[in-house]
Image (cartoon, rainbow, N blue to C red; front, side, top):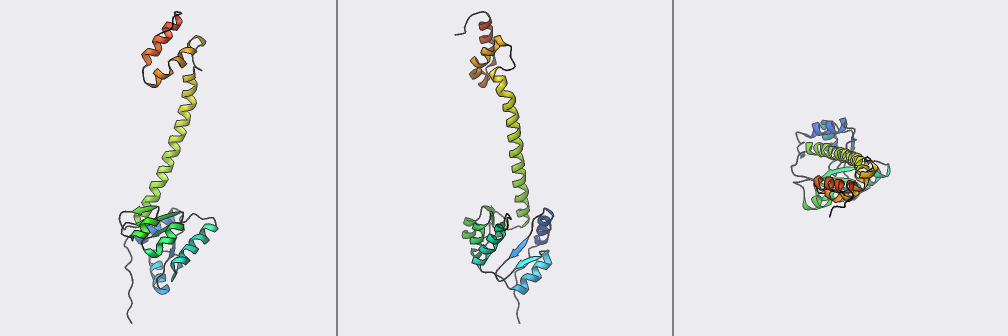
Length: 191
């Protein structure tokens, strides 16, 4: 009897552990032999395994998880993974994968390193966090800046100067605004 298996990537167990520590439910779906897959899954710490699965059944499994309200990220590299990559909420293909898988995926990892999956999740969370911070800061800036620009914080005699010099303020020409205000106080309109 001859048994042939793919070698397990060195970083696989660490990547699975890191994903699980982030609260990700890691599931292995493959078309490979059930016995071999079970041994590999045990070795890298995956509890849920679906083996000897056809490509169309991979899609059905992704849809089943989505129907349960789960967000599904599918990681794959082959032609057989392409339909499931396209169906998943986020499809991740490795750069060493087939062109079909790369086209079907939302994210393409340059290296064939499973730790990059963890890094991409961290990067996406940091990006969303930065977007939220920028949105809040822009909101605060506008809540404070618009009333000031409209003259809300100026005395009544200077309010007209704020809107008259608004274009100049936006261009950074504060001196012309001061000139406008001085002319207005003196009863003249700056030309």
